[in-house]
Length: 122
Picture 1 (cartoon, rainbow, N blue to C red):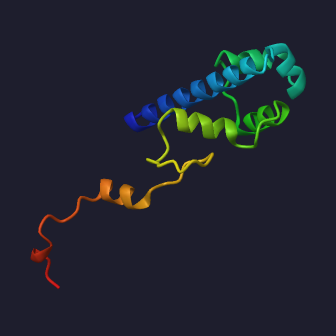
Picture 2 (picture 1 turned 90 degrees about the horizontal axis):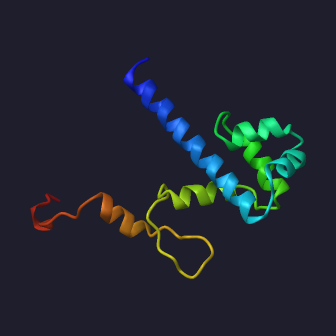
Picture 3 (picture 1 turned 60 degrees about the vertical axis):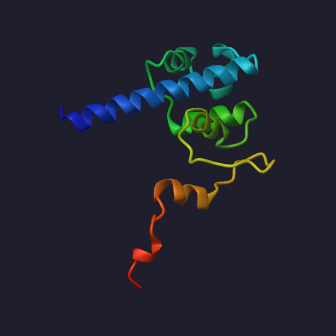
């Protein structure tokens, strides 16, 4: 196994653990047990337990189904996960429920301005 494959595998395992933690947290907020979630998802309790304990990763379809049975907005679980892990672009809030990217600030952050614009050849 090369270094890139190892890093990719470690990253996948880390994200899988974050997804499992997010699902456990949401289920706890809604007072849904493993057993109840298994029934709602039409999976065995063991299958949910394996995902709950990070032995088996939650698939994208599983996550969508969890959102559906818990009455969540589609995509909200992963959106919140990304937001809380600092993986979204820098944003500025305007009192809206979703962040709006300040493109000018993002460009300035990524590309420093020329200090002496007179040196630029026209």
